[in-house]
Length: 382
Image 1 (cartoon, one colour):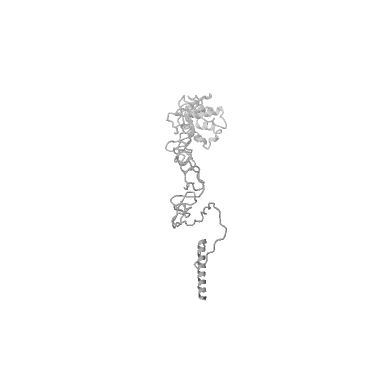
Image 2 (cartoon, rainbow, N blue to C red; image 1 turned 90 degrees about the vertical axis):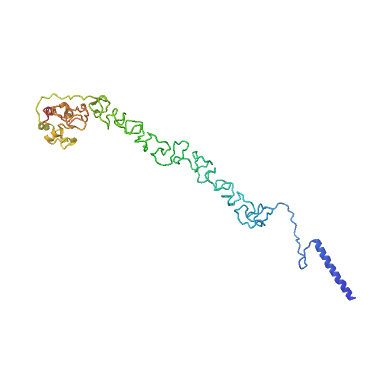
């Protein structure tokens, strides 16, 4: 009897466990390997159905790099660990503006929409000709025309850059001011005041022929058939040329070869007008004694005339040509051809080439002294 009761109890326990197992399976409780059910989440149920926020781009999403394109990924390369290929470590295709420089695709990528900060919005490095004035550029017109207002080096067009810009006649790109193109980018021309090597002999920058450089930028000559180069008339007179003939223009006696300058024209010399002196025989000793007190300036040889003795007086005057006059200082027997007589009478301007002042300068000779010199010349200047 007792054994029967025990058997019935064991069966009841077995049935009770089996029912409990069925109940757990029905309610979805998990059972551990030890037979104990896992604890169930008794917290509140989240009923928010809004879209989940996109992952932080600095944190690779779960599964990126597993080789499987998961939701939210545009690419996925297994083992990818580079931000410089077509697929980035965030499992997105490389794109200009993502802030990553993708090798072989982009030159730069600063992730902003500005063109003038060292990286263009199309992810190219800035360069002259991209149409945007970058730091260090004066202009950028995005064309390859080198002779407009903005040359191909993106520097401001300027004279001397070697490119003929609007408003320039030439531009040889050098600083040589005497070649065919001036430093002002103007073509060299006769009259610009610059002597251009190989093309001009002179250039005084004026329109006058009557100076040291003609309007043709050549020096004047006394045989060029032109009235130029300080000449008083055509190829004569002036500073460099021989005297002019009678009737030609002149500025002074030195401009005339055979005459004197009278009212701007070369005219025949005016005959000597001597005083009426009684004839007398006078030698050089008597002549020198008359002028010696008044001609002290020539005592030491001033003006190439040395009057410190009678002999030196005679040697300095007889048959001696003066510096400019056309006749000798003393021509024996000819007072009208003796420049000394014209000088003491203050008639030197009547002689071709005559000039200067009366002789002597400090004190004029008396009539008696003058007649002594005249009679000395008439007596043969002995």
